[in-house]
Structures are given as C-alpha cells and as structure tokens.
Amino acid sequence: MATNRVTRRDFMRDTAAVAAGTAFGLTATYTVQAGNPEKADTGKIINYNPDMEYRRCGKTNLMISAVCLGGHWKRIDAVVPNVAAGGWVGLNLDNPDFVKNRHGVVSRCIDRGINYIDACMHQEILAFAKALKGRRDKMYLGFSFSEVEVRNPDFRKVDKLKESLDKGMKEAGLDHVDLWRITCLEQSSQHDKATIENTMKALEWAKKSGRARHTGISSHDRAHVKKLIEEYPEQLEVICTPYTAKTKVVEDETGLWAAMKKHDVGWFGIKPFASNSIFKGTSKPDDSNAEKDNEIARLAIRYILCNKAITAPIPGLISVEQVDNVALAAAERRELDVEEKARLERAMDRAWANLPYHYQWLKDWEYV
Image 1 (cartoon, rainbow, N blue to C red):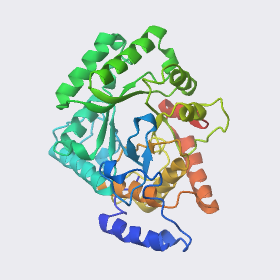
Image 2: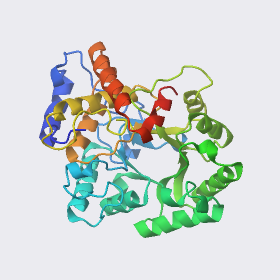
Image 3: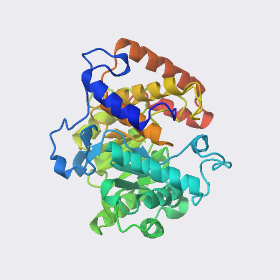
C-alpha cells in the first residue's frame, strides 16, 4: 500500500466530503457506512469513534472495528530505512526509528477508532505490547506466540502450551490477553488428534484461569477449520484465516461460512492484500504508484467487508498514512460499482499471477 497520499488533514477533509457525497469524485448518492449499524451500546465499545464501523465479534460479544491492525510489518524498510536489512522478521526491536514507527501507527489507529491488534509472533507481541503501554484500555490485543505453539513439535502438550502462554505474557509485561488464538500448522489437518485435543484443553485452561478473555485458533485449512468449529464450539470463539479480495462466499449449508454463522464465531481475515501482491508500487513514500495503490487497498477492504460474517480484515500497516487509508475505506460506501469491481478484479488477477511460490496456498481461499 502507498504511504504518503492520505494525510490526517486529508482524511478529516475527505470524511466531511464523503458525508456530502463528493469524496473521490463520487456522486451525491454516495453514503457513509461508518457508525454503529448493529445499534450496540456505544458506551461499551472501547475506543469508539463515530467515523468507524463496529462489528460484533461472534459470541465474544466484543464490538470490533471493521478494520484492524495485523501484526506483520512487511515492507517496513520503505518508511524506516535500513531497519529490516535482514528481512522484516528478526529486525532490531530497540531501533529508535522502528519504536517510533510502531508507536505512531498504534496512536493513529486509536485516533481512527481502530480497537484491535493481532500479534502472532514473538517480535510482534513485544513490539505492540510496548506501543500499547499506558493505553491498553484503548485496544484489544490478540496474542499468539507462534514459534512456541503447536507448529513447533516440542509444544504440542498441554503443559508446554501453558508454559508458552505464561512465558510470552511475562516477557511482554501482560497480565492477560484479550484473545489467545493458537497458530496451528497452515494445513491444520496435519495435526494428530492428540495435538488438537491438547490445543483445546490449553485454550479452555487459559480462559478459566483468566489469562485469556477469549480463545480461538489460526489455520489456513478451510475444511478442517469447519470441522473443528463443529467439534469444539466452546473453545473456538474466534478464528483467523486467509480472506482476500478474490474470496467468494458459498451460499449453502455445507461450507465454512455456514458453520461460522451457525456457531456464532468471530472471524479475522489475514492477507487482505494478498501479501502486497495486489499493489504495483513499493510502498515507499515517493512511489509513483502510491495514489492508485491506496485506492486499490480501499477497494479490497470494502469488498471484504461486504461479507457480514467477517469481523474484520487485519492488514499489517507500516505508516500512519496507511492507517488513515484503511480507516477511510471502512467509512466509504460498501458495495462496489461496476467500474470499481472491474478495477479490483484486474488488480487481483495481477496479484494471483504475481504470488510468490510460498503464497500459492492463498488461491485455496477463493471460496468459503
């Protein structure tokens, strides 16, 4: 996504223009989606902002902003030069420019009414716990110490999973997490029955002990997620799966979408921008594709939010301008017109063609 075309001033101006039906060259029939369509008690919505839409996160009953902050900070070196020379994983968390960046992004999320962060790796937990210090009441924190959970064969016993949660919370200075969503193997059906049962026991323990307010899992295995939701409805309050601007809902009673609705499960969507493959530009502030990439990002968010079963997409965001851009998307008219659909389809066709080898599995999520 571009980083320099939607400033705070621009967004405040454009928000007013949207209400008047003139933003981005649209007609006077343009309507605002933001607000509280579910008529929830706004006094109970943390970090409520009338310019943001909020959705009920399944049986957790948490009201979550319609777009949230994902843990990954890919392309961070586009805005913090040289911080990720060895890749976005493994960078120096104490780098002052990186610390400033993460604090600024979280601050802008709070400004925009975004109220959930999903951190699924050791570094993400530490960075975001630090950025949230002193203002934890403004945002829910989703937690997964994935390096020492069931993806790691040494952490497939209940006692080891308990150890993982306690160690991660202690290291991050947390006394609880709002959601512990254990990161399973991408193809979670590869886990044996004992591992799945141990996972569910650990989740149940975490909730009963007060360490986690709510529980769930992350998986890329659509059929297996559906099976697990049906077998463990108490433990699986929330799931985290891929969901892109290519994803389409199967309108029957046999798919994942139907199981989500039946068991009232909250749903966070990762990779809304197909791991940045949807964009032509580099996300550098001076990139010539910045404006068009920002527009495509908003179209993707709007498309995903057309599925009312989705709680929120959780893109990784590397700048305050990117936060402004996705927040603006959540406020824009939901349904795409014919021309917008065509633009998004072209961008997603390009993304599918450009997907790196290790992200080809995203194509398995065209239908849910």
